[in-house]
Length: 241
Image 1: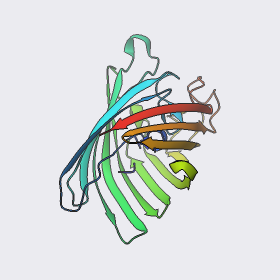
Image 2: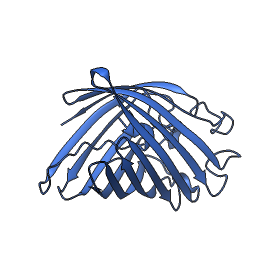
Image 3: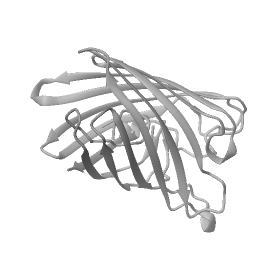
Image 4: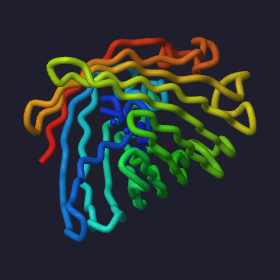
């Protein structure tokens, strides 16, 4: 599946950088397939914003591909929103959807994802529906939440991604997303922002190594009075089987 994680995860360090999920299930038509992944990132960024107070995170997930286009899965990561005694310990995502190829170069992916946060007394859970359309190496996508993280209201997320194949089997992935809010609740005095990432990755069997530049156009004063939104360089390693 292709949702950032980005959560709505791109190489999740690229999908976790764009949406935040890391699906590795690939099945032949008509066959049932199970896959799993575990990884380490130097900073877990979701739509450009640090989810771990700038610290490393261990992540992992499992996916079930039914072989007919339908899939389900779950993915989890450490998080740290710096709440002190009210700190959230980890995030767990549950998702399911349908993906298919329209022809040799065009495919689509639609689904639902629920973000659950454990360890906090705050109501941070929320849900999204998502969809994307891919034309060869270009992907255009959209996600919508009726009530975004920490009850911050309706949220809209159009994004675009492009993948390049470089020599030595290195992948270059570029992502740009626009975060739109109905109200100025999520950020201080801002109802929208851009996030971006540029990542390099290479597979060594089941091991994927990646490095990325991730950032936003949000100032520190708007970003919860933190530097979580500033551009940063990340490194990640994910093993899938």
